[in-house]
Image 1 (cartoon, helix red, strand yellow):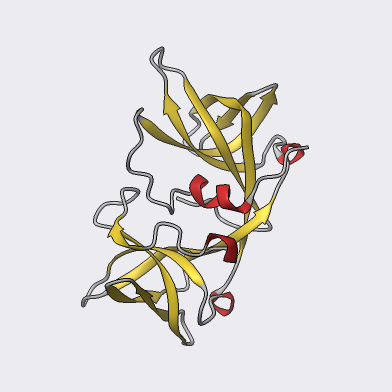
Image 2 (cartoon, one colour; image 1 turned 60 degrees about the vertical axis):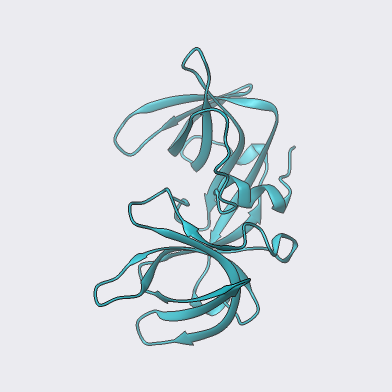
Length: 200
């Protein structure tokens, strides 16, 4: 059985802002149809079926559902956000990093996953809980951001996983590299567990 190191989970979800990829990248998200050796077939919500070749030493990790209560002062988080009406930023996705990954991709930068979006990987300086959602103030070297966390934001945190979790119907996401022959390959897979939504 293959257990993923927590350090790799953050890379799976691109919170480390891996912008220096040398080969074309594509996001693959959906339900596992089958795993045959190192060949993983995934069916997307729109019905498209994609087969990805997994690297011989591929890693696997999971995300589990979290809540505003899990975002504590001093936590290191990655917040994908978009501008909200009236100004400011509203979170689309919040990933609570394990302590071993503190400092990963630290800073505030464009997030290529959604139009007009940003990713802020930073330390929580303050949290404000409200009846509907809340907000966090994040600090990083040279800056600070206060971001609203609406109830619909996808809040997740890392959890271990193993190859045996890649069963039919499991919800997975990965970043795959397009090879010269058009095929896709990946070295990391993320599974959504315990009611979690897949990371974008």
